[in-house]
Length: 77
Image (tube, rainbow, N blue to C red; front, side):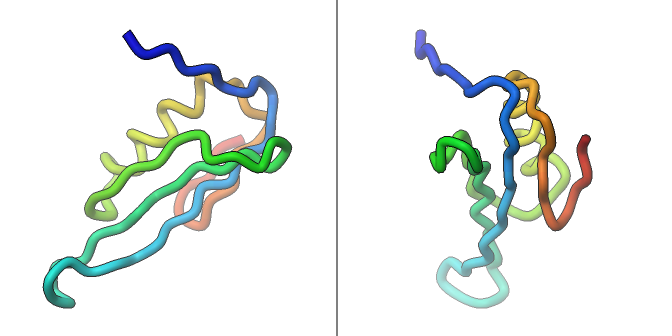
């Protein structure tokens, strides 16, 4: 079993990067969660930009009991 330690009580920024696979009609997104205090990537997901994709990342982040999560798509506080 993989043991991952999350920084607790930090500020997290979620960023999205759009890319294409094979052609422009096949959009994919890289969603990353970045800790502002430690300057490390906490989690990431590659896939279509859907609520499910974002929830995979943000759901994991809630274990860190963040002070705030910043993103251009969702709003958590």
